[in-house]
Amino acid sequence: MLKISIAFPIFNGLNYTQQCLKNLFEEHKIEKLDAEYSLVIVDDNSTDGSWDWIQKHYPQVNLLKGTGDLWWGGGINKAVRYALDELKADYILWWNNDIVAKEDYFTKIPEILADANVNQIIGSKIYFFTNPELVWSMGGEFNPKTGKYGMKGMYSPDGPEFNKPLECDWLPGMGTIIHKSVFEKVGFVDNESFPQYHGDSDFTFRAKKAGFKVLCNPELIIYNDTRNTGLSHGESFKKLFQSMKTIKSNFNIKQELKFYSKHAQSSTAKWVVYKRFAKYIGGFFKWKILGLFGIKRKEKVLV
Image 1 (cartoon, rainbow, N blue to C red):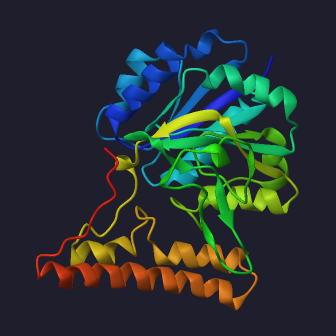
Image 2 (cartoon, rainbow, N blue to C red):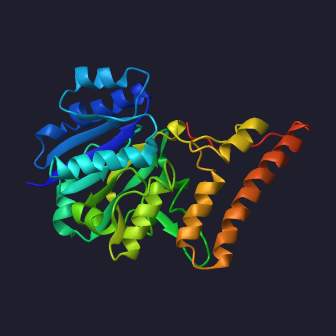
């Protein structure tokens, strides 16, 4: 029987964790399926009672305590090492507490793995939780020569092009299935360079460069609540500069430059980073000025 460990770190967000564990244990009933599923959660010193609540309501969870400074990279590494060393897992399934899975998700995994091989890393088709008609991700792309980086299908209405397996350059840190041999060959997430963001894309892109095939399978469907993700400027000057420095932000310029310094193969590729941040900063000031004339930015509606 396949041993599959679902692994993720948490820091607060108890309401998301409650929804997540209900989805896994009560709706999907992962303990009663053909594959041997286990769950490993690293609580990185939450202050909202997450540790006690999980212990009380789901004692079957392998719950590990963090120090408060693990972030995603250190937390996922701790969870994965435990799953491989102590639980002897064959596969790791990267997860998040702010996602839920379609009803057939966990029954499809063994079927898909039976037709795959251990040299494949398999990702999930991800929709916006607040608008399940829109795709959030069908895997990631990165061109080391041009610097083009992003997620396939993001904000796109679902369609035929997203209903067939797609080969990718990288996969996000949720709904991604990784055989133990990948960790043996590639190592773990580089949490020193990428404590929060880019750890997932760096790991899976390194795996691709090492010869593993990276695929997104549209039969595996999850829904991501993006309201719980990252830190942006929020139309505030203070938050604008904070968002470019803090580990909590996907707009951290230092982290982005590290990724490109590690993987870009041309000086042209690295300029993509500066163009992205020029657009980010320029867009902020553009709408600040237009706002003086009563013109407001039209936000993407996801609810």
